[in-house]
Image (cartoon, rainbow, N blue to C red; front, side, top):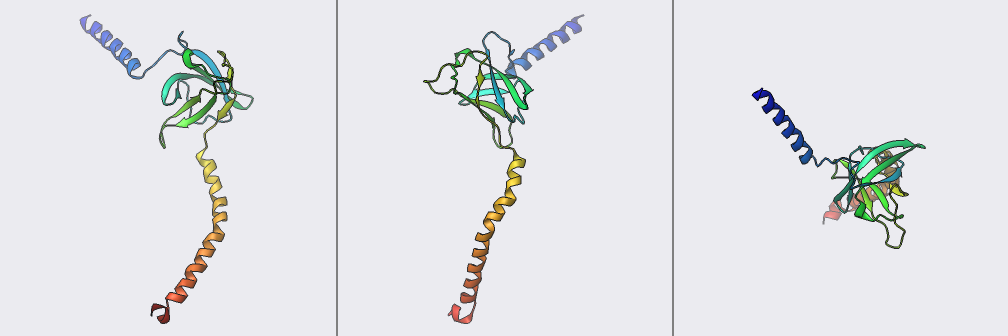
Length: 168
């Protein structure tokens, strides 16, 4: 019985510490309210992901659903944010290969305040790496005339400087 109580207490302590270290919060807590945002792509974002303003965590992603061919995200954010109707939501990455999170811009002071359950209409989806790679051949085609010009200039310099007369 003593060993069983000890193991139970240790498991409870482990669970409590895991929640504290992970900064886990229940998304439906009374200290948050829902805001929605639609994105064309949210690749890499996950439910319970961070929502930040200026690097400070202000909420979590409650759910990610598909609606009309777009990703509809529900955020649970702090009520003291005073988001405006022209607020902007962007999918960002921590570092080069880090986790994805949602960054909010509060919007202008002159715009009306966004009500709980309101929709952020200005969103920016992340740039996908494969989309960047698809543009590389077009960029190389643009640089080809410049490279040919450089080749002809270096060839001319080699003819002028490469001879005995050029060395003298």
